[in-house]
Length: 372
Image (cartoon, rainbow, N blue to C red; front, side, top):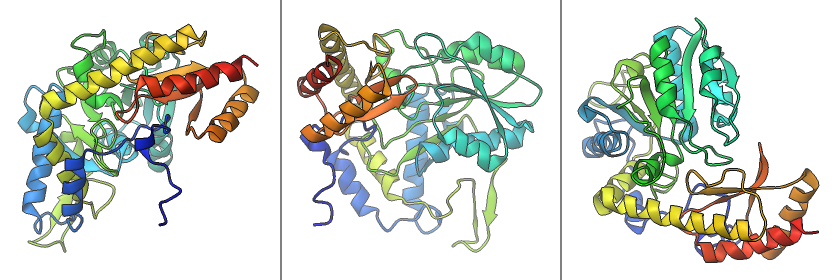
């Protein structure tokens, strides 16, 4: 079989991925929707309605929208497309050509800047790898189209102070986009008990949020998500396709043909898991993360962010040679790992397919490599 040599989340060796095994209910719904093209909504009105309900649920349950019925959004190909759409819409609404991004920004903003002929203005970080909000304020200019804050950075899992960023953005009349591709399905629940900031539409400056169902939403890829406060920003990038069934339709996503399978998978998970089910998953993963962090400390390993903000542990590595040696040893023992560059470290993303007991065996390998 062609997939025989590919990785399998279920064996507990995939340590650096922000994707995981999809929920069985999502898999069943995904397969049932393989024929659905949401780019032609007239042909698939029920699937289209399911997407509207999913966006409403994300806006209300995860993103604290004060009027979720006004939210606009789409399930798209991933966080990259979602972030590009946010930048594109902000450029068209504001006329600005600059995006202020943390130094921890996802590479999708590089793509957005190149495609849209915009300029990235990089804001420095604090010691916990969150953006320096005072520096962001100093970087705002008349050409600023968008400020970006991150809830769950790719390399360290850090969560920016979105509340403070919103205050700055509101004071200067600049839109704020939140990249919560990773943390969108966990931070809303974890902040009930842990010191995480608000990051949703209850903050006045937030105009759009990226949240990816194919990460902690347990949906098969591709399933990114872009949610706008209302239709002002997406209407600015909308185009009309006259030849579509039923007299044509408007759309603002980058892709015209859009798979309906991920939407139906998310819809099924919402019905099956609901708010409480996703809350249990979020706390279980974070509690396992805290166990991994404690084990790392016991072994004398240094965490880049301590304690971890979300379900990601980054263990510092002293130099590139050590990182390459760890990559070789990990591959020899069957671990699939990911090394970050800023900071130099090994990323362990505590997705639902992992537990602290399994990851502790890998930590012992890291300690051996660092010990000589």
